[in-house]
Length: 365
Ligand SMILES: *[C@@H]1O[C@H](CO)[C@@H](O)[C@H](O)[C@H]1NC(C)=O
Ligand SMILES: *[C@@H]1O[C@H](CO)[C@@H](O)[C@H](O)[C@H]1NC(C)=O
Ligand SMILES: *[C@@H]1O[C@H](CO)[C@@H](O)[C@H](O)[C@H]1NC(C)=O
Ligand SMILES: *[C@@H]1O[C@H](CO)[C@@H](O)[C@H](O)[C@H]1NC(C)=O
Ligand SMILES: *[C@@H]1O[C@H](CO)[C@@H](O)[C@H](O)[C@H]1NC(C)=O
Ligand SMILES: *[C@@H]1O[C@H](CO)[C@@H](O)[C@H](O)[C@H]1NC(C)=O
Ligand SMILES: *[C@@H]1O[C@H](CO)[C@@H](O)[C@H](O)[C@H]1NC(C)=O
Ligand SMILES: *[C@@H]1O[C@H](CO)[C@@H](O)[C@H](O)[C@H]1NC(C)=O
Ligand SMILES: *[C@@H]1O[C@H](CO)[C@@H](O)[C@H](O)[C@H]1NC(C)=O
Image 1: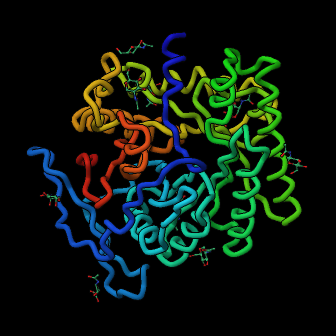
Image 2 (image 1 turned 45 degrees about the horizontal axis):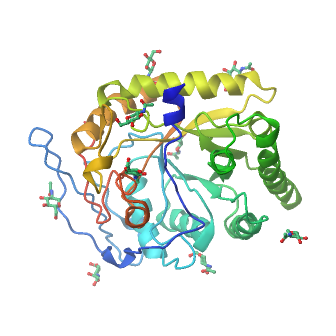
Image 3 (image 1 turned 90 degrees about the vertical axis):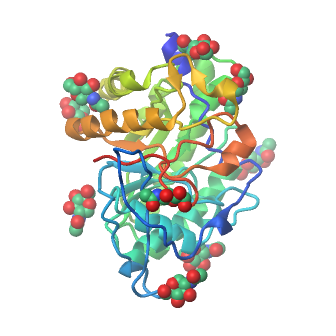
């Protein structure tokens, strides 16, 4: 049970609150880093996105070092937190050009700052085969303000772009984890926890009826920490996305792949199968931090933040999960410096790339 508690993690993807350190303008509009991979020396590969026609984002040249290795990728465009925002279509297009060479699926966490439309517009302009799971990140304590604001952005994006590239709408990110933590509730299925679940359920049902009214069919899901699904919430959605983090559970990099598989199966897949709707389950986040901003948070028992350990995690987890047919979203596309500024520790350092698209870690063979 100690392990389960630890997996709570502190992966706060605060789309709703927070001081934003936007380094959007650090991204060049043209990337010209050389690209190669040499795992014998550990040299980093750097992703490139050169367009042969500067006016046509679909004309980008493919980077031979990138492969569609991942089932899916967790993604937040830089500058997608209120009140500052600051994201841009040009930056999202570059991200999609690179991510589309790694995976056919991305998931977003929230809808503020027009990120749903930006991603769908980028998919349209790049003409890539990419499905996006849109996100709505409600907060338990604002009387639905954040939920409604994001719902309306999602609605507008569907009206503009249609449903072809939308895999689902995930309503709630660690909502129950936050609710029970803030209210000192130990059992996520207790009567007290169900009071919070009712807030989230109202949001989920509202999105479902919005889609019905619009005459479109899109799966509606929910994401939470792997041991914090409330039964009533999971019974109301088409899919659940579970955060499963070996690093927060004090598991060594060597043991992380099998631990993640076991935890997800026992905590999440079994739970979904026990409920009448048998929601489809995905791993919403799994990954490994490459560093900590302070020495004290670098390790969690045997789990140590380092590039070498991310490589071990990738080498073991990705191939096994692909072989096993597990739907997972690698956490995450790029380091997020706003999280480092706000939370410190390992929070900002989970990216496969840094903000300049330089690989933090060599990819899979
Ligand atoms: C990007 O590349 C295009 C085409 O090569 C070029 O016209 C443009 O000036 C470049 N932009 C920057 C900011 O380097
Ligand atoms: C990637 O970029 C970094 C920083 O510019 C550079 O030091 C490194 O040599 C590059 N790696 C490769 C393989 O080109
Ligand atoms: C949202 O992004 C889309 C796609 O780039 C754009 O057409 C639209 O004007 C944007 N809306 C706002 C409010 O910025
Ligand atoms: C698009 O990606 C999906 C998911 O991997 C795949 O099933 C499908 O065949 C792809 N379509 C094309 C045209 O490549
Ligand atoms: C919460 O929102 C509802 C409807 O959106 C409104 O009627 C109610 O007054 C609000 N309550 C508070 C405490 O703001
Ligand atoms: C894949 O399945 C094997 C056999 O059941 C299991 O030992 C392994 O832990 C699984 N790994 C992942 C990452 O799913
Ligand atoms: C639940 O769905 C999965 C496929 O997603 C299927 O393998 C399993 O048999 C189903 N379980 C029940 C109890 O219906
Ligand atoms: C994980 O390791 C940290 C640091 O050593 C320790 O404080 C914490 O109690 C451990 N948690 C578990 C669940 O073992
Ligand atoms: C860093 O470590 C301290 C002491 O254990 C802890 O209180 C704090 O929450 C940690 N910060 C992060 C971001 O993990």
